Image 1 (spheres, one colour):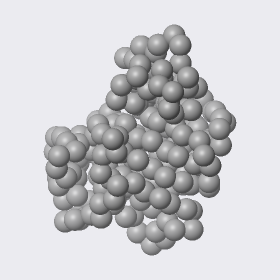
Image 2 (image 1 turned 90 degrees about the vertical axis):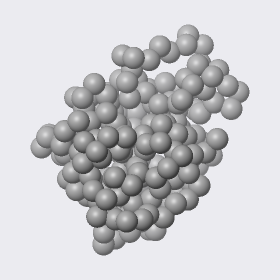
Image 3 (image 1 turned 180 degrees about the horizontal axis):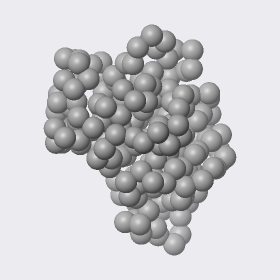
Length: 193
């Protein structure tokens, strides 16, 4: 399975020859493209107009979905956004954006046993602080920060996590057996164009 960061809060997952993208940067172009992701998840459906004709299966509501080898759980009540858990090849990826406070017990229970957390760290110290607290609540095996200025590094978030540096890759190629076992690893992804 491969995980990509497309910039801002957009990520992509490839698994078993199928593709999924969350919050594409240009939704209309993504959905009409001949190379469109087969599955598109939208975390802010109330602020997103979906083109009528789409080459992709669009998920924009909470619920359970099993499509193209991806098992997707969408949860409401995460600020105004939908949080997603995407499971492929036995690896659970949680996608969280737009949060301004720590998770409630109910939210935390919904996100239990997450392997990789793709979390919006934003640009403000407050957002970074909240993101770090959420990481500590969820305790994933890996964290992939998103939502920061791709020209730099999320140094404030790294500091909040007690890390001075983090490994950077173009994509994350991961199998369940390769996930860290003892502690949470922070991985920075370069923007994939």
